[in-house]
Length: 117
Figure 1 (cartoon, rainbow, N blue to C red):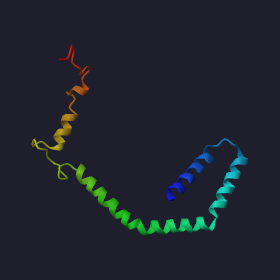
Figure 2 (cartoon, rainbow, N blue to C red):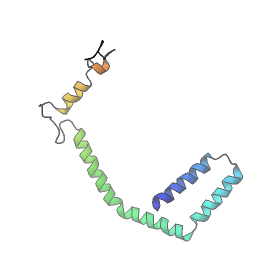
Figure 3 (cartoon, rainbow, N blue to C red):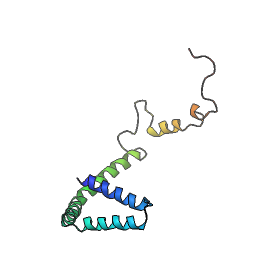
Figure 4 (tube, rainbow, N blue to C red):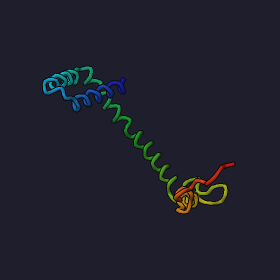
């Protein structure tokens, strides 16, 4: 329900901002929006959504902080549980190998000449 409402509001805003229908049509749309906005059911729904957002904000903040910390650990040099691969080389060595300017990806013509078997 909330997604549909947001979609309709976004579509309406996009239409109003992008319309070339003139001032009269703009005023008509704006009047309709104000009528809906002042509807007691819409007001109650908006307050309910705001209260729910305030209630859930600390939980969301905690989860985002945890996810950001976990992501930061994965990108730190030597961080996380994937600091070395089975061959004994580190992820950093793998990245250096991928970025090697002598690799075939950076050569003028990396494709073999002649017929392939």
